[in-house]
Amino acid sequence: MNKKRVLALVLGVIGLILIGMFVFYQYNTSPIDNSSNADIEVVIPSGMSTDNIAKTLRDKNLIRNEMFFKAYLKLNNISSLKASTYLLKKSMTLDEIVRILEKGNNSDSIRLTFREGETIRDYAKIIAESTNITEEEFINTINNREYLSSLISNYWFLSSDILNEEIYYPLEGYLAPDTYEFALTDLTSEEIITTLLDEEANNLEPYREILEQGSVHSALTLASMAELEGVKDEDRKMIISVFNNRLNSGMNLGSDVTTYYAFNEEMDSDLTSDMFNTYNPYNTRSSEMAGRLPIGPICNPSISSIDAAVYPDTSDYLYFVADKNRNVYFTRSASEHEEKVAELKENGEWIW
Image 1 (tube, rainbow, N blue to C red):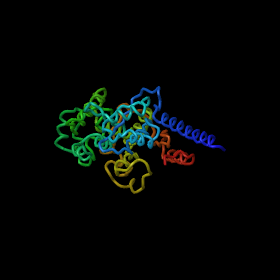
Image 2: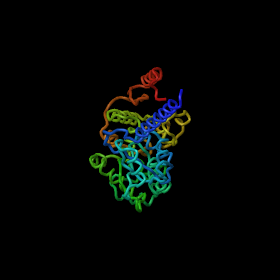
Image 3: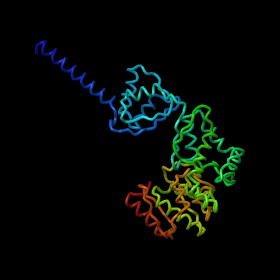
Image 4: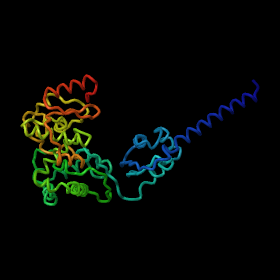
């Protein structure tokens, strides 16, 4: 092979490499979905590392490759991305996304999203990640008796029920899940709490006449249990009918979600017999809780769960069980219930 052919071959290989690099670069800097116009919320808290920013963007499907994202920053001498809450789109190029993160939001506001079924502890973490309010500070405000008394006098749906000393977090169940926008300047726990309580007041107003005839605290407690036990609205209404039937029969409610809450356990593993048999005012698995609701809500429920608590179905069911796909099955007797559990396990549909 003569020198010209070798040179041509080398140049050809280099050309192919350059073309490959160009295609790779274009692919990783191009939009994920040109046709998408949906806003995707991305929260970059203060002090977040580049690695975690890259992972967050990849998890949100806004970039294709975490390593490329970090290399892109180095190639463009970008050393700082600003903490804030952003609304990004899949139709944005990598260059557009990076320029937005480098510049930061001009506004001094932040969006906080609290989801149905989350607890006060979850709320505290979300707040601490995006503001200067620590988890401890938020929890301390939630537990401040003097502050709680002032809230009771201002909101018709709050009562002395929340002041029971055995309740973990007095406002659990009362802080409406939703997405809120707050001014970051001088933001306080009290401002967040009253904003969420104002929204809860709006949510509960349509049910006010009925709720004032009974107990708001009991209704929200039932709603919080149904929130975690079921997914479909119709299931939640039937679940509450089961709870009502068991209460009327003097039975314990036997709700696993209350046991998880009682012992501060994540709902990602099976519970133990020791937990079931240990008395706790939240633990409705305990025989000592026969005929009783938990002492308070175990999460902050959705409007649909509140509606289910106010307008439950009527039935003669005493048991229910959910499979791993969150389908719920209702039965009338202990033997029927045990048969259904055995069937789910045999078919590989048991939750664990």
